[in-house]
Image (cartoon, rainbow, N blue to C red):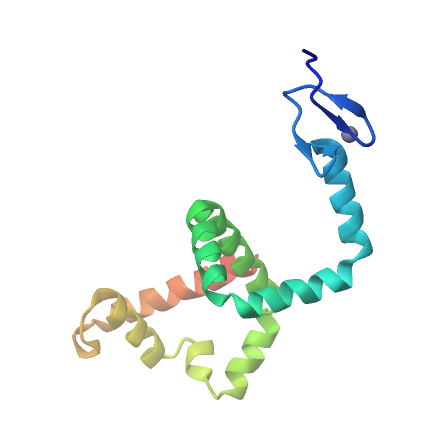
Length: 149
Ligand SMILES: [Zn+2]
């Protein structure tokens, strides 16, 4: 009996260990698929969107699985992205805060710093010593400087 069981349309006879797909070896099959995808980009993108619209539950499961598998990687990526985003949009952020009249946040006003401290320490604002507020303000300033580096 021959060890060649199947043939690739391009490469010829394949051994048992070579995976066979769509009348081509796996290597040629991959090339063919890539070619097809390149030629039918628009068509495939429409089909993909349509499928996604019809299968929201499946997408949810896929995403959850992906996120679970890539948890640490995503965490690092998100952190890096957040840093970059902050730097790129630092002026916009300032403008937004100004527009919203949120000068208290921008200028690290006592009431803003106090509310952050209260949340962090799980204490009531009135129980927090004023020296702590000053220290926290310096810390927040320092953090802002570090983030903008
Ligand atoms: Zn082949």
